[in-house]
Length: 207
Image (cartoon, rainbow, N blue to C red):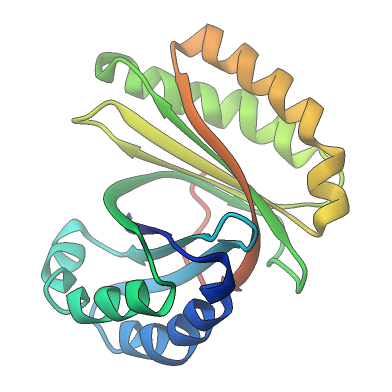
């Protein structure tokens, strides 16, 4: 399984316009493309940052879609008045879902850099240590890990039932992340918290 994520950084006042465009135009279009297995959208209304992630059954399907989604990406950037648009392609290395994200769900996203030669060990450690720790947290819904083996980058997103659960797990998540980084050599480059505004990923269990 593979994924393409688009990070839009724009005007906080335009986030709702961006959400509406992705919901009404991008998602229907993606559903018609061969190999698409879903989409999610996260939004930080205060910062004006949104992440739109589409999932694909194969790398070939993802690559074939690249030209087809350019116009919709450009329109989404206009809707959010984006100052920057970052596009990344990933391999989905792990997915564990206890239940779907309800209305009001939130997500914590972490980005890390690491030695590419240690990627397999990091993935194994994530599955055996981080996923069980996250699942034990109150309000847990799901977690996904995506990696770029060539560039030595990874990102994971844990979804929780509501803002209260997100805030209540913040200290626990920080401690687990620091311990995980020491053990695997993964160096955090960014961390952000979002509202889950769309959750249509149909990626199967990969834990």
